[in-house]
Length: 391
Image (cartoon, rainbow, N blue to C red; front, side):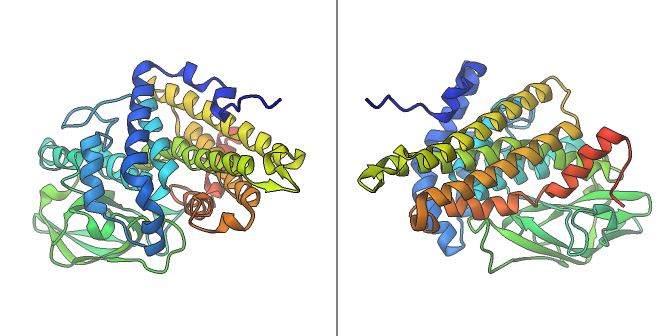
C-alpha cells in the first residue's frame, strides 16, 4: 500500500527550526507569489517583459523591499526572515527575487550603510514603498569578477563631480529612479547617487536574453555626468563599499536559489506521480526514486546551510567566506536539481507549461552574478590556505 508522500523539507524538519514569525512571513510571501505572480510569470518570461514598476509597488506593499534594514520605512526583520522571503520569491522566478535583492540589498543597503542622513531621508522611504526603484552600477563590460579594474571615473570640477564610464548587466537599470554608481576617484573608489534624467546619463535594455527574461537588465552610460558634491556616498571609500553591498545580496541568493530548486523538485515529484510509463506511475521506478532522493538530500542540506548562515548573520558572525560557501554550494546544487528535474519531465521539461526549464535557464545567470562559482571557490581557498590566488 502506498504511503502518504512527505515534502522534502519535512524530511529535515525544517519548520521546527523556524519561529512563528518566520513561518508567517514565509507563508505570506508564498501566498502573494502564488496568487499574483505565478499565474503570469511564464508569459513574462516568454515575452521578455516584466511590469517592474507595478511589481515594485506590490512588493513594497508586501514589505519585502529592504525588509532587513532598520528605519526609514523598512520592516527591520531578521536575516532569516529576509532569506525566507527571497526563497519564496525565487520559487516563482529568479528575476523577481533579483528585483528585490537589487532594490534592498544593493541600492537601498548602499544608501542605508554609506549614505548621509539627507540621502537616506530622500530615497529610502520611497524605495521601501516601491515608489522609487534603484539599481547598482558596479559591473562593467571589461570588469566583472575584477571590479578593481573598473574604468568609470569621477573627477572633481570645482565643488561638482563629473562621471564618465559604462556599466553592464545592471538589473533594474532602465526603470530605476536612482542609480548607485561606483567610480574611480583620486582617493579611491567612491559611490554616487545618479538620479534618472540627469544630463549625460542613459540606460538601455539588453535584449535577446534566454535567462532572467522576467527581469530588466540594462547597460548604463555616463557621459560627462555632472553631480553636486552631496551626490557622493560619504561613508564608502575603496572597494570595501561595493563589496559590502554584494555580500548582502549574496546572502539572499543563498536562500533564493533553493526556492527555484524546491519548485523544480515539487514539480518533478507531482509529474512523476501522475505520469504513467509501462502501465505504472513514473514515480514507482527505482531510477526515478534515486533521482528524487538525491535531489531532496541536496535541497535539504542546502536549506540547513542557509538557515545556519542566517542565524550567524543575525548574530553578526556571517563573514564573507561563510557567505561564499553558501552561494557556491546552494546555487550549484540548485542548478543541478533543475537539470535533473528536467530529465524526469522528459520532453515536457523543455516547455514553459512547467517551470523547470525556466528555473534552469535563470539559475545559469545566478551561478554567475554576485560572484561566479570560480571566484567563490577562490575566496574559500584563500580562507583555507591564507594565500590569495586571484592573480
